[in-house]
Length: 464
Image (spheres, rainbow, N blue to C red):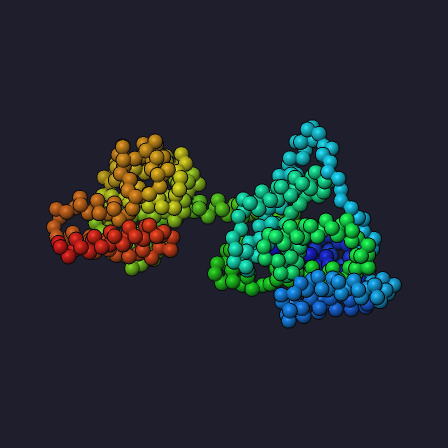
């Protein structure tokens, strides 16, 4: 919303200066302001600065009072009392009154193919524009935003606008910010605002005739000011620079090519990143960080006959082949060669056909080299997919709900190797469980299971 806030501000600056303005593109509008500065109306500038100062002072010293309403009423009174329009201050002027009657749109079904493309683009961009300020305000005030309900609300609002010959409707950044600045804290404020708007349209247009445009500009500029802060971008740069670059694409696009094309570029790039990031096919071998460096569970990687592999993304058609090759390469380079490969599918809620084919092929390749594939998943849907595709307990591959259970099963296969090897493997398994308990993505149920397994293994070590 940073770029959109800048565009709104630049478009309102001419109203504050009493100059013509009118350019739609950001940089052209900025240059027009610079070239027209000599034509600034001193009285208009004084009105705008007074309204800005009033807004900031009220928000600073009376934060619970509706600063925008106070400035609006005050500027109306001052304009009427001092005849500001006679001193070159632009005012709103006469406004039409009344509400439009409902009427079905005049376009026939033959226009549907031409309208659907534009409608889809407007819907996508309106939703993208709505979610930005909605999520930002939700973070500030500590509530949740349901994207599905937002989409339904925008659709219902546009259906209603169509019945009254209105323009397409999207969430207005400036109006959302003004509503927040006025102290709105619940959806009831929107109902009150809608009712007040209807009453104002019916009965109050004559009262707004002398309202200075500079006052409106000041109110909106202060309202969107919080959207123009640099601090959130600095935070992104410190945490993850790639996200900071993505966050800058939208404002740069909005400033360079315009609001709608800029938002379209940002949405398109975001969708591309959604596919690209999981498509990297990165895997985590037990005993290594995702970066490839050793960690506190390095001993687990040395457990004879067992290799634990966890894909760092959902397994699907984009990355299935790459993950298959990564696992095959890890098995080939392992010394000694593992008898069992535990493949964690905890991040995979479903498996598509290419992913199932990749697992089936991996299982066959491992079998040909003397190893076995044991997928680890507690998702019934994934288990059903594995069964239907032939990669399942009913066929040649065993599937376990937890990696610890699979490791215990593998341990039982080697119980004849002697007590020393048994104790070594049990201690390695305890180290592995300790690392798994530190996983921030582990749910409470999984944590309890790991604690129970840890207790059982320690009991086994004491009795054995």
